[in-house]
Image (tube, rainbow, N blue to C red; front, top):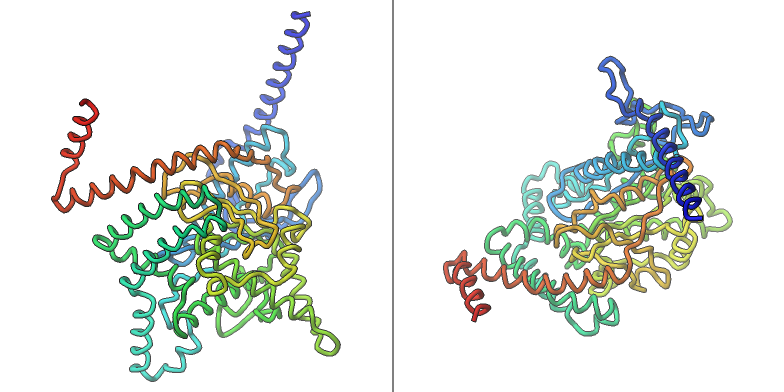
Length: 501
């Protein structure tokens, strides 16, 4: 009996190995190095994408011509297209992983001669808001011949958005607010306990930045203060313009304006005309919206405004009905396929600032999208976070999500504390999800990722709490060492002598 079982097991292993070897052998030519004279083999930009793609023996329109990703960046000195390029770079590695998985599991649906390239990636850029001429171009043009007025408003802008001392004091106050015991009812006991060591580390880091690198406070953290807690009409006008510009760039991918009417093919203002390539309009019918860090808060608000405007247009009756706008609204609703948040502070912002920083989605929209999704999917909104990322967390706030929170997914465990906030651009878990949902399962099928067990995340949280208690002490000693008050050698000798004794 044992021999029969062992023979069957050996036979099964051999057949499995042979099938896998055969699959890999068949795809070796695909991975070979291409000859220099084999032109335009790899569709690395939209101009090289073929009109059709062979899927299961059928010629169909190439999905890369109509599928895209829209990304909204977080804080910092962001150059135009920098975040889009960062995300696009991660897509290259993620696509290679998906392709290898498909080949190994015999899941490829396209022909061997075709490639599914990284999707067209467009950025909701807003980081240049301190540039008044770029942010408020039409208003700025009113002072075209008045240099004194231009100088005045430039100085006003700088004073409102670059206040280092005010930003430092503001962040210290928000850290104290997060330690309020009432936060337990908002985020849970474990998350609140973890806030304590986090705030100690944040205080030391923030103070160190003020002493050594003040531009970190003025050029990075000031973005958060301005957006979530604007003071006065000037700052509120800037924040409103940020939302308007991000929404405008998203709608441009649909060939629409904020009134959900078609954009002209040509316009005197380049960003008020349709996207084009080689004089041919680019319009997408499948888009995944991705936000990172503060960009998730901006994205949430802009989506809320888009949903509200769409709802107003749909609610019109009688002679007020505008078929052109209704068509635009339908296009918007059918095109936006997923919302993905990376390293999102939405829960914290919701607790600290409520309506001042966040505009909740209109009644009914949350249930319509989170319950069924734009295309009937349960994973319309997915939030990725990491326990070692002090900014992010699982999104559960009823103020944001109602009674239907998004799917909260933890990315890979092995990321450094703090640096985990930037790990989303290279972690395969969110990247593979974005790609598979951008193209759809019939084009780019991928494995279902395993969820990290709760007990592992809890253990990681406890480890993090211990680590966060050690780091502030080390940072304080480093500062004292830098000031010449005490040295690391003296501290270490003291610890060794205490342990030995």
